Image (cartoon, rainbow, N blue to C red; front, top):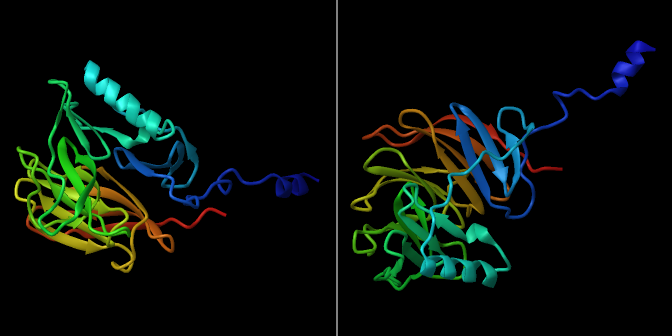
Length: 255
């Protein structure tokens, strides 16, 4: 009887497996040392075993001035209450939503270049740490091209597959593509020069969602999902060398 009861009780270790839910719920990666947590919206899993996890606390958003707060509130209201469209730089100096970039201390919006020389239109602005990264589209499909912005908020460099960015050191950022060509890029922030690339999956399929987080040294963790293939990668990106995969964990689709 005891052995029968054991068969009927599911193993706690087998109860959860890391998986990606269908759809395009935004992904976020968090790191506590080498322990990674992968979240889709607010549903989080531990990368090592897929067990449910609590979403780690995010950095506190900076206090906005009257004008910025009013503009941000209107943008959220106009987008059905979706506050995820608002982003803040790591140092709290900047706030952004869609094509708008606000100087928090001066409580004013700054003018950002709206079109690239080849005619692509500004779509959104995000950050790699505290560095603003603008995403431009020249078509209606998954063709977003990213550019760092200069001190005068003009694009620099020749562009790269736009997406989620993290700062590797004081000079370089790693960009995991989203809605763009499936190539990860290491970029020099001041010049916009692409220092190295690495294909994700087949390197051709558009990445529908991605996330990146800084690890120790020159390492980073990257999640990507093409719809047909998804994985969490540990990327090694030492200065002067191309990025390489140190470890890969496949992420199957959730049943």
